[in-house]
Image (cartoon, rainbow, N blue to C red):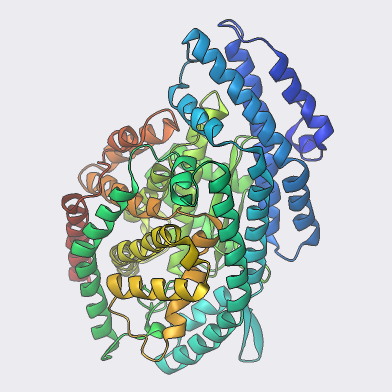
Length: 574
């Protein structure tokens, strides 16, 4: 089958796309034709996936771009539902062929299992609901992207204000914090309205699919979580509470001592999650995007030349947009332009050490994409998200030996030690925060009627915060504490997508432990695991990377102990 170029496909209306689906649906499947047929379907899927990705990127690169928003809405209304139905028909055709012949195309064992789940979950009635859910995410992005404050007579995004916040004295930070909090509180009502809408959409999707009000059960299947259960999540939360929360307490105690204060207030911590220590020595690792990317490239050349070549290719082809600006959507991500076999990295850098870690993190996702693009079929490339985040988090740690100027990196040796120390402290603080986010989502979908009222969500978030992060004093600022679930965009845009980070950090820490003994061997195992894409189950992906997929106190405790040991070594150097 002959397909148009990716650039032309971006402009095709549905009547020009439908014939490709019709042709594939009409073709007979035999052992002699199935692989060619699968390759043609894969190409069509690549073209559709890239179209959706490019439209989504346009909406976050400029949240004020009316044309981009209109294009996305047009896609959701006039392409997405028809493509979903077409893909469902082709999935059913392949599954019927497999049922009759018992034959599986090479490397398609796990993808077929996932297709079977997708077929079971497909309901035509859900297509407009899913489109509405994505439109809700656009509205959420626009609200957050429009949040600016005036400081020193200058309008600025909250992200752009962050470096000045970090460098200010405590009294000034407190003033900034209250200014930013007031701006966030101004959007409380509209975000609550969006929340009620999206929760209703999700519950209706679950009901239509036969799960009643149990959206969590639906989402578990939708996310293809074959290797663990909600009960395993509770085990993980308990393990974090037992060993990671006390370790986090030790980090907070040291930070409190460094600041010389009796208790930690929100302005003693970062602007976003309000969990990480304020970076009082104001490290400035780069000046502008060019320097950020130059030094990142140098580091990757020391980690692995092939990975560095991937990064340099993206840069040369304009596939990295990493500078914050007014109107740009929040956060950072890596997406795939599947039809040209390239990833795209999006971020909001403002010159802080966190930006370096984010670039390393998103580059890990990009390297994963490059490795999986080598697999013959689109359907083989999507690894479980719990391993996708190992790809990114491990890259942050595998790059650590090369952060200094000696390797073309960002820091002097002393600065690198401080940056690494901060990074590892943040890793310890992340597990409790992740537990708050994940446990909150379990509460929401176990109690959907209560959760429809944002005040109940505020209370649930506050209770979980006090359970896992009792070290920050929000006395008199309770409204700000309860607003934390607004700041975590995953809750609003990607339900149940957060425990992946906690599990992946556990896997990445094990990969890093291997690298401390044998850097080259750990990188080689890491790349071998990336190359498997979605052709191996989650525990096997972890094993290939040199890690164990687990939730228990022993595994979490070992990772915490390793992290604290290296923190102690870095503190000794300083």
